[in-house]
Length: 262
Image 1 (cartoon, rainbow, N blue to C red):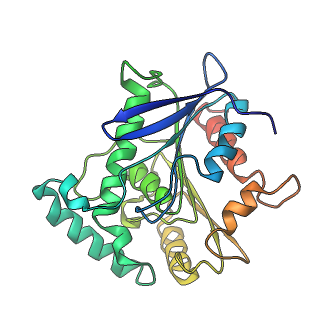
Image 2 (image 1 turned 120 degrees about the vertical axis):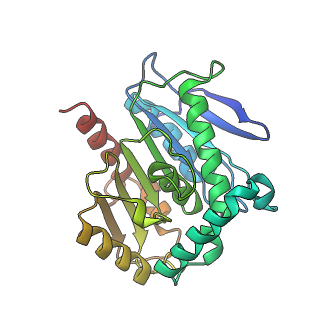
């Protein structure tokens, strides 16, 4: 794999930064990625970010890997008016996904999704950023970061929406509020999850897949038939010939072609 394009680091809001790569004067799309870590740990320099930084710019795309606020008391970063909507949505998510830790659906998720939106807005529109507002947007994330990316793509109850991406990719992640995914949505999604994942258990994933298929929603759920939570990472990092080696770039290429009407 080629060396990644030169990286630039920016503070997109106070206290959080993103790394940005682009090797062409006019990229064909913007890809924004968020790391995992249960909303309490992790960093924008994780293994997948480094891998994608070497891969995506070579496809003629811009790529950003973001940090977001983690740990602490997330309620302090949300307004008092947010609390009823966040609490009600978290209860609804926990009822849909009883196998998944309920804390992943509450204020930590909302705060991370807030930051995801701020990063996208900065990359697209801020005068200090690359001003990519007219490009197709692709959002992606690993584990908790994948939930934030999917939360951004479809919105979360009680929050305003952002620009609709053409594609949302969840790696070892599920959409936190599946009822917000509707047939005919302009964003399509793909999930890659391992069969033995104890954090995103198979029963929860199968329930999600059945619900989305029954409602005709544009989400592809792909399950690796072995491994646990980090197996998708290993498969994406595998060398040529691995079954899921090109899952990420092929999903992106397909979405860009579809966005161009090709």
